[in-house]
Length: 481
Image (tube, rainbow, N blue to C red; front, side, top):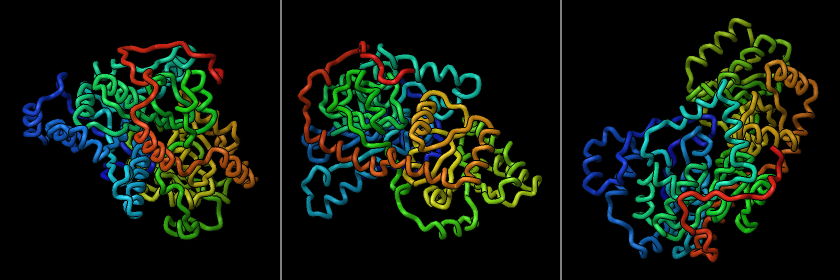
């Protein structure tokens, strides 16, 4: 099973280069060959797409003999990509287990998974990470309004061909040629484009939607999704009033890399990173290739540094990622304040092992970040003013007692002092997090994918009805917004 893993597992890292512009029409074989002649202008992912569009179409028999499962994300932040890679890894493991058991003829053993970024197929070029950075600072309340309130009450979006017609005709052609056995989507744009492609091509394959936060917004294609794989019962309650049938809701958890569910030796992990064994280790995840969303987060961390002298029982570990300028600034501040209980790290590959070394994690409330912390048994302080889906994540985690939240540097410092004086409070967060922890979400989604493939074609004709725009009126929302 050839899963194309292009990013580290942790959601703290990752940025994507923008794809080059493409012409509006779907390219012919000749057009594609000409494009490949100038391949230096294409990313590896775009080259793979061009080659697939120029290759002979797969026949229906070939598609049955060699099922292809597309796992599609959008490079808007790294969380959606990390979730897609985790699902692909679970599909790979299912293939390997089936072959090892001598079941070479089974669906699992014959299948192949392919991870795709939907933005690589776009008619118009834009960088998803930079677009996400636009919703910071003074624009964040507008993001909250559009994400949390628009189309999340009674007026809802069902699905339609408009996404593919306007922006993604190349993906439709990709689907028509490759005849996938299923498409699993970890981003709302990918889900809508997949629904569009299925409507236009008339092919029969299931579509699974995997929201990577702890609430699903109203623009998911509700009525044309075969299965929603959601984090918890609270999310299921948001789908039922949207008239999503019960048999199309599956509570799996959010898929994180298996690395975050493994057990590591804490003492060895601390020795690896040069951390003391006799202190509470507090890990601050401040690393990102695009620092704009982390401006307020990093500012709060900097403001508490002068007060770390008052927390001698704690060792603050700040992960700066691959931002060398930020790392140098942190080291300068450490020297200026004479801090011996602060450690600065650059890019970290073994993030799961580092979490094992920590007693507490300070992080932004991104869906994949908090899921990784849950799986790694790491208590959290969610730092910063949250908007949109991050607000939903904060409310869910704090209501369950699985995390604490701090909006300002003073609140963060007070929370650290409380945990320093009452370490049992961190243990309480761990106990409460057991309600939300689902470390095998990716495996559950893989099993559900194979089950849906075996059930094709669907019995409900409404799932495959064709619409250009499909809005509908839902029931009273389960959660007041």
